[in-house]
Image 1 (tube, rainbow, N blue to C red):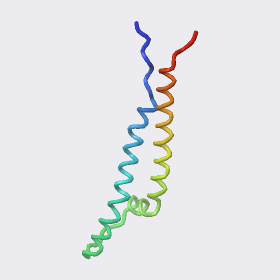
Image 2: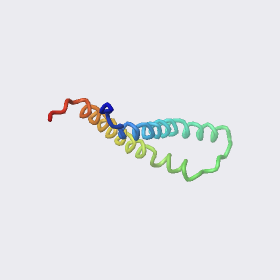
Image 3: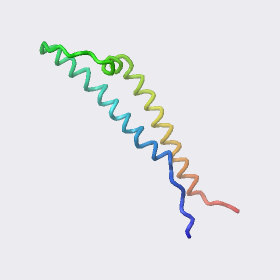
Image 4: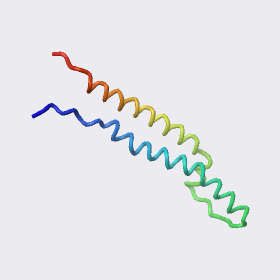
Length: 89
């Protein structure tokens, strides 16, 4: 049986973290514009807790998610580097 490298769990965690970052960035860019267009058109949209929180703290969410993505990326690359490094006995 060949010595296969172990699974890189940091990369596995990086995928959903990057997805959350992308969804938050798109929502932060699009939702306020859609709300402003609806207000100009005279439509009153009900304010939900998620939209209010996104408007107030969306930049903070994005900052935290950026840090998580950077940390997981560095951890995944380090894990791969350590796995490829020749082992001495």
